Length: 639
Image 1 (cartoon, rainbow, N blue to C red):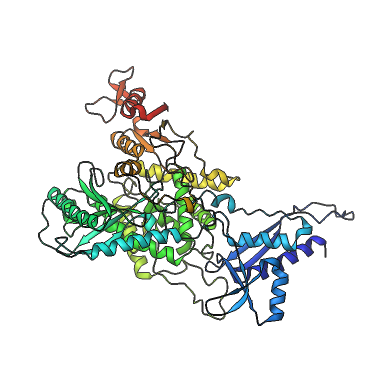
Image 2: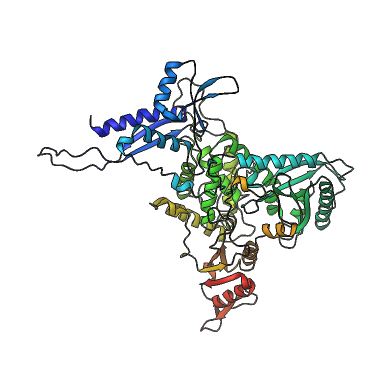
């Protein structure tokens, strides 16, 4: 046996003992390049003491991130002695609440490093110091792009901050539901969250009294008990809701809560005024409530706004509940979906061209349809598998069907169960599958050119499969965006330096608009002991949560939807809500680049060609118009 083989075998034994139940399988692969040699001569002996060994781990998602390694009890003297010899000074005696005293190791957690990585570093330092081993964890290069609070001791899979915000929301929800009819005309029947930060899926982890996160103000829907007295006119209905929220605000003020009522004219569609109630909780979190009634859907159907209403109210509530359950079921889903959102955001796609709910559904695929693998037990593995699926997904011919209620294919209690037992996706509820397949076939018949919703992602709560991928109007925009997502995912698979995954390229865009950041760059890096313990004044709070650049982007998107496809994401730099490189990009619609005969009321500026009856898009005029609209907000435009 060579020295290298001895070291590899020793490494396997050390890792197996050190990891224990944290891992299900360890694979060691010798990556030393094979050298050719002549068969007619004796093979020259070379040094076999150097090289690279790749260690692959299949982790147990329930065990791998535990911060303690428990050893034998103090009564087991011989076992305790062996435990101390193996772990050295890291081992210490601890008394637990049940009275048990045992050898224990407490591991320091890190925001960008798994506990198994920390264990490996310690074992190499203790048992392989003579080998001068250098260890490199490939996943750490990616996980560092996930924004984390300044306290770096929080693990990437830790959801404590999300749970803290959920607790604050539940406390406020209970307060609203406990209001009597003497305080509010109708009792509050339900308060339902709809925001990513309340389902463990926002890019930034929520911090108290911090308004810089991507979901700092969390949305929720208030439902009152049934009443036939709600108005039958949409405008009157929305104004009545505002009156109810003003009444709630008065009661909250009496209980020392800071709240205010506002109106959003662009929440559903431009011109439709929808009221909201902002509440600053005593725990340091901010929530925005809107009211839903049993008459809403019929009212919005009359004005053909059923889709945006469904996306903001009932559909948002049912989607939230589903994703919340999945985040509890799969410990690594939360960091995986946050990492995937960060990637979409870095490519200027998140929110501007693909909804967060659609990204959350895509992130579920490696967990719910993992075959031929077991569900991932690390965020980076789940991220890679999702990108791989997107790169191979022929969304023109195939839909995605997700069975969120499906149990595992093989019982984990089977004594003969192997590593393959947790595989997901081999079987699916037949009735649900038939229902989704019928919906997909119907969708293809109704939208053969894919001008409405090219991507179909069906679930139990959205059998239509297009609630989160559908456009309000038929156009080629969604198909262009879907093709771009596929191309970016395929390009990601060819990049050797994975840190470049989150670096956007502007060379593919026809127009690049560099925009000022009116708020200045603000980082989410905080140390808990120095956190702010109060909100700023009301005026400053309103200013802090207003994103002028996003408003400007939405104005451009509405005004120039017939001439260009615009891209923007205010969170595309890791750790920052409003990046220093604040950019809006655009590509021209292909159908307007060709000359066409002049006609009155074209949707974009034109200029005559040499042939007097033919006009073409007047790009300089459109750019100048954008400059006038943006004013001092724009630094420069290249096209």
